Amino acid sequence: MKRKLFVATLCASMVVGMVAAPASVKAEESKGLIGVAMPTQDLQRWNQDGENMKKELESKGYEVDLQFAGNDVATQVSQIENMIANGDQLLVIASIEGDSLGTVLAQAKEAEIPVISYDRLIMNTDAVSYYATFDNYLVGKTQGQFLVDALDLDNQDGPFNIEFVTGDPGDNNVNFFFGGAMDVLQPYIDAGKLVCPSGQMTKDEVATANWATETAQARFENILSSYYADGTNLDAVLASNDSTALGVENALAANYTGEYPIITGQDCDIANMPNIIDGKQAMSVFKDTRTLASKVVEMVDAIMQGGEAPVNDTETYDNGTGVIPSYLCEPVAVTVDNYKEMLVDSGYYTEDQLQ
Ligand code: BGC
Image (tube, protein in one colour):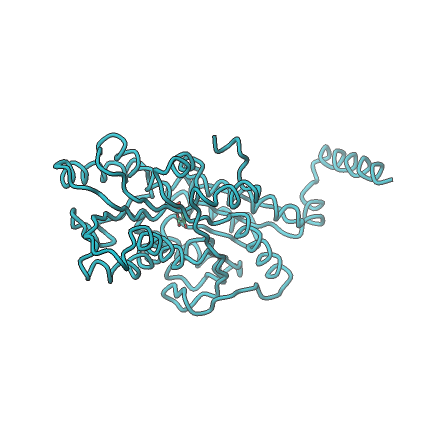
């Protein structure tokens, strides 16, 4: 019976397709058109985020307009303009640069299209209805605390040598990742237990444009040749995510022979997993993109049904126009000891992908 129905539906839609009148049929079938704007396909996570959301939204009956902007702000702006012009009814946006979407989102607001800021907070526009992300401050604190524990800083005097690498300065998350880590590490720097031989310790000095591996690698090669070529030991590197950590690890592989440092990361990118398994990256912060995508789909569905989206934080994320009601998912530290349980047993990766 089921099968017959399916065949009948299929034939009907084929006929409709041939007489070229699919739009009204689609509108009747679909619960609405959702625009999903992701920053780039260059980094693993945004592909996963985008695909997970598309799959889940479609399974709930929505149509999805998924776009990637190649890390180019002008491209992202024009993709969003098109989404508005095409009648998208809700926008989910992971921005490239938090400050660059004010003008286009004013159009969205004018058209009464709700906007969910995805993972990265969109700044200085009152067009953002909700924010869905991981607890970014906790990501930074987790990385900082990992270094404190690994170096046993509460019991050892050191001094230990540390260097810092964070992400794109236009990504508001950097303030939370780097800020959270520094809130944990600063007391040990003040006590002289942690020393930074390059002296590069401000957010701007340690930033990496576009979070690019090659940019982090080039900066780190300079640091190694300028401050460590005389045999000075590097004990730790605070890297805010995996793409930048990989740049550090590449630079170390080619230019450093001292005792290997403790390096942090974030995302559990496939490219970093061999280094985590081999002990060349001590940890990564796992942010299960499936969880965030599911939460956002729940939020979209609630808004599209005329209700309020679920939130669990109404204090932390002020985008310059006021606090944006947020849903924060929980990040988890992953090391060689728990990666199997967290990543393989949970179905996030297959064992084969990590070989
Ligand atoms: C995300 C991180 C990611 C970075 C680079 C940040 O906004 O929160 O998970 O590593 O962007 O794509």
